[in-house]
Image (cartoon, rainbow, N blue to C red; front, top):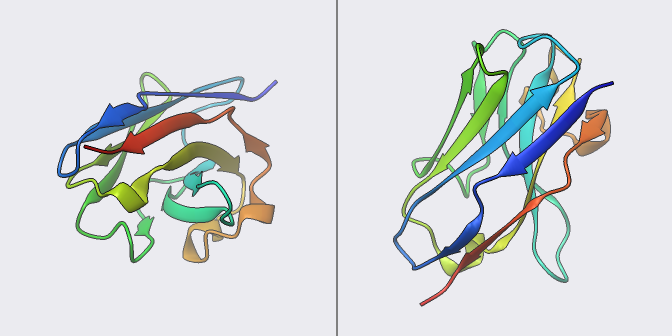
Length: 126
């Protein structure tokens, strides 16, 4: 059974950094694309970043470009989201999700992701 577990969230000051982890089990690394999404209170879920099944494509929302980096450690079956220069508007619950689609990272379309983690809270505040 596929399972995703996020970790690494917390409280950080504006301008600070966090690295989120999405540890996968029940599937082979590289057999799923992994996306990161976030949802702030009262707001819709937003796609943040995505790494394709092959790892050849990394996609970012405009809000994340230049500040966030998505990577994968195949040996650990873990995908990371390095977040730098954090802003208060980055405050949200962050979720990772898995999709077997080969093209899902082009659109970060949430309904095309099959399995989701439980989320990790990121709070950016002074």
